[in-house]
Length: 414
Image (tube, rainbow, N blue to C red):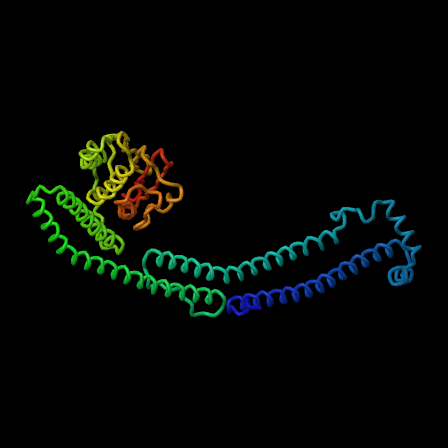
């Protein structure tokens, strides 16, 4: 059996086997002692009966024959009838027979003592075995928690024999593999960040030049409507390209963990009002309304600059997917556990096939009417919210609108 490959288990079974064999030997010795003692009690009783008969003038030969001679079934029946008439039978109380009562008390105590000693010995042996095993498992659990919390140098003690050490060894192999994988992932993210950063910086110079050339053409005011139209379109595309580059840089920095979120307490109503103010001109131009419903006393511990980016992207998304006359309602509330920001619109809604994919990077729905989006704004918002220790959820019904919930646990602010 594989269980006997464990050294401590083997010792446990050997110890228990020795204890059981010892108990068997002690039991046999106790039986011999009991039998010998019982014999003494019977002989002593017979001596007393013989003495009693002799004092009452019964002959010695008759008394000797009565105790040593063969007894018949008839003798048993006659004796049972004679003594039974006086209440001397198997149902008689032991206390009325001093020899029997004394015999019972002595060996009842002996049996109790032996049982208690046997039980305590077995319990002690089991504790000696299981307490160290339990300590090993507790230490292993602590080490695993430390590993999960970021201490990648933690390894379990697998230097002993047995199944437990084999399990620890397998866990160590898995931990080493995970550590290697984490290191590779970190390298890949750093490579991605550096690559995106390099490409972005390389693009900034020609992009700035193109924007300057485009502005020069606009300032020329040639009067040619075709040239003016294409110049404006060129300007829009250049702005989109610049936004894409900036968002890619932000997302790369978030991915690789080079950004430190600097949290401070901010009045949530003032923060949201300031954020909405950035979109009022566009909302008025597109004949859409943005409203705010938030208690003045709610405080959110956050990095204002980064959270502004997250909320702005969602508001922009709402403006992109609503029609003239539609409304965007922004609210906030809190419980003893969480603070929540809600951004709701009554616009186009999200197709059921897209609801689980809208936060994926560069995801573009085949049902979307927005042909200008680059599919990175919501991804960036999700990363920022999660960097704050929060979560972002979405509810939507096609042609009826969409609601985003940004939930921030208060425990992360302690």
